[in-house]
Amino acid sequence: MTTLTGKTAVVTGASRGIGRAIALELGRRGANVVVNFNSSEASALEVVGEIQAAGTQAIAHRADVSSLEQATGLIKAAIDAFGKLDILVNNAGTTRDGLIMMMKEADWDLVINADLKSVFNCCKAATKPMMRARVGSIINITSVVGLAGQSGQSNYAAAKAGMIGLTKSLAKELGARNIRVNAVAPGYIPTDLTDSLPQELKDGMVKLTPLGRMGTPEEVARAVAFLAGDEASFITGVVLSVDGGIVMQG
Image 1: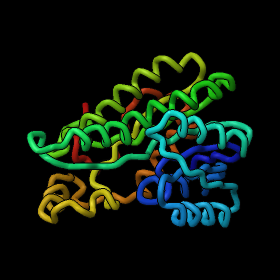
Image 2: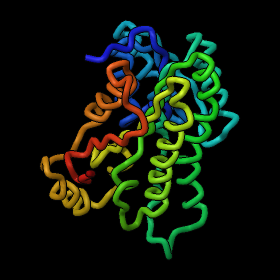
Image 3: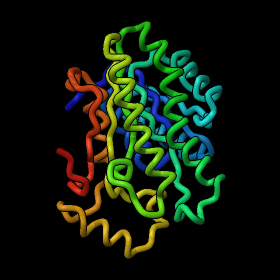
């Protein structure tokens, strides 16, 4: 198992769902974790408590990472608390589904800002301390929707596809400073964001998945932990699909 002992990680949107599972997995493997949240403080503090109970350090930090100022404050808080930043996991995001002809401009802007601009903000804030240290791992949580598209999710698909382009560009920009940038693309993982989907759509996604089941947040978290650690030291610019085969690449 990849060990992350002595490393410091920031996980955005870490109070629930996939972000929660990632924060817990990184903490279980020895990392000090900054649990970012925007509104769910009680849930974030529960995650902090679980990480601390496992024997590593953690703090919660409120920040709306779609704001560059607040994202910069999040990275500063991590360095102030633990002295450095080794791992950044950009997981924060939301959905506002609808067909394009009915989609409100505000819903487009909200998803682009929450899902894509937030990644730019956090990466921009994190790269300076990582470049100074000449080490770092950035993992962006995209989606199979960013690879294949999805009817009724043009805003979400655009944001997640943009995240993939950003991942590959930053991998090229930052590789010379030993900073690796990768993406993980979950398939159908039950979370608060998927709970509102119609049951027939959920059933259809399972039928399209070659492994014939839904994934779990913990399966995504283990993939993130691998990419964050030294065992993945020669991996950068990749999109690792954790999707049961629903989107075949290559």
